[in-house]
Image 1 (cartoon, helix red, strand yellow):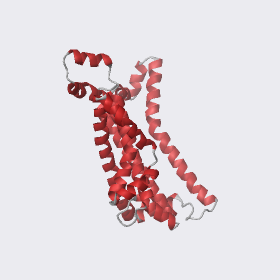
Image 2 (cartoon, one colour):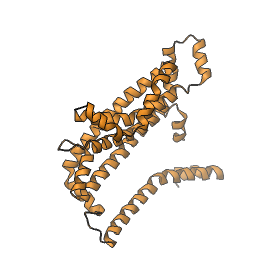
Image 3 (tube, helix red, strand yellow):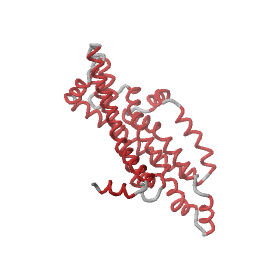
Image 4 (cartoon, one colour):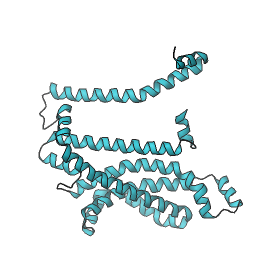
Length: 283
């Protein structure tokens, strides 16, 4: 008898049922998505075989994996270009979003003056803004970086501003009663309280920065050996090279998943010892 089974027997039936349910959920959280993914790949392969679909229309998964291996040098060099734009734009979004959110929290007049402009940037499609960027900026990297930054900026600004303004009013009054300055309130009360909101916005902005980088490459039509994955997709589409197109799409998807997982881990590590959302996950 294992130690876990011995512990379960000592519990009352309701508690034992809850422990078993939690254990099944932990296993299912990984097994079910993997099983569905394997089934989807198998169906993809079978559909190609049953319907005798040409490779240039829908390649089989094995062909895509082989292309990913054969074209690894080209695809991964393009991935590095896309990642550089992604992370630089995310870094600028964090600096600009947090900095502006702090200004908004310190002055309602500043927030009322500039927040509408941030909303305008958010709701205007990047493909509509890019022609203006293309006119005023000559450097290709700067164009891509600016487009990706516009997409990633608003979630961090909005979430951080919400967090800074969501501080408990009683705690704020307590700080005032003890003579804390506005910057002391910001450092010891409002910034820690806004951390979960900021990290939530960061997870959203991480994916959006990758999307922004890819979309920017599409609308910019960047070509050449130093271009990103979006350019490889465009090139493969023109040449009817569907295996390379699918391989590039898989790389983009896996990169987005990896970015989300890394940022989720960072959020958990920061919040796990003190915030309720992370403490619940530890139970």
